[in-house]
Image (cartoon, rainbow, N blue to C red; front, side):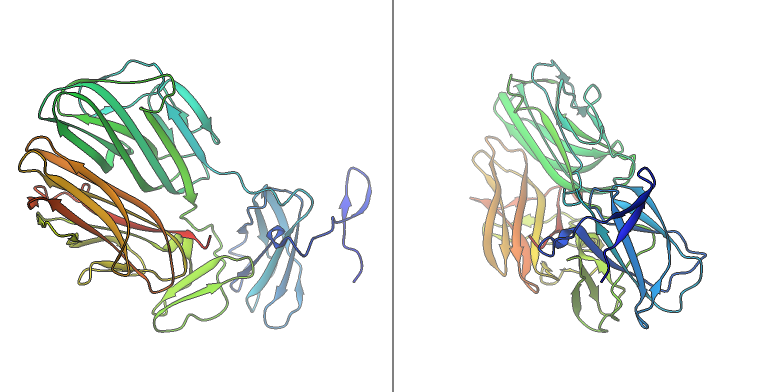
Length: 425
């Protein structure tokens, strides 16, 4: 095969493309465009190779004939293909990155913390910060405590936050929550006890569009003051996009027809995992394998660990959750983030609310175990990354010690579970 070259306009000559190492397949991305047309052009391919030095080759899936396409390099992670004629069949597309293409695509992440800023917390107060530790895409405003999802970076974000305070009155609570676009999305831990200091934590996966705002909110029953220190470990907010969550225009899917029954998976030449259930269209696992379920009615929390009696499926594209069995069924092998928050009303001092993760009916890790010094409200939280085989079941169980307690409120923002596929690992 002759040496492949490209025209270097600056040098005024053809230049050989850099050699491609067969031991580094991460500099290639293979996709399929389903019967592309002139009208649907351009087709955007997301290759995430962090380089503008790319070569694109296209050929007919059926005839193997090479196809001439017009290419536009959008940025270091995207190219656009323009078709001058309608194609009768699906088209294979191979994007190859040249020298410097093996650097990973930049993450979207940020961390704000408070080292010394004084802040009064009268109730439902957005936490502010005085130090920006890192911010890869310029989404932070420390003065307002707001992270704005950057343009072109929609997806699922893991948001975590904490604060500590002083001056909590006896028998009162102090809670914490994540706000998306000014509305509470998920509650975190909640404390009630004797007067003094309190610390509260929250963590949840939040699906966002570009331009959405994220904030951490302190929710004390009455006015308290924040507590900060030089290390900045008691008041902070971290944001990290864990996957895109949204599919680019011009979807590229496997050419194989999905089987009509069962849950099925396919790994394409680039290593991307696709899923289909009962004949549905192929979808990227990292886009589709997410679910959120909740409890919308009051229930009694038993003394022996039992499944949270979920009664509402808020979002579950692949029907992963079964209300009769109260578990998620894992569709493909890989890492999963299982998260949950549960609420209870303590009936007296010393009563404890506990939560734990279970895989195939066996304990896979404990979450929060919070004890009350008075008869008051308790909120406990669970976040676990668990490696699973296809067909494994994941669930959350809760218990109250030494006696039962009521969930008190019918509120899906404080009694819910989420399951998110993180990848093959």
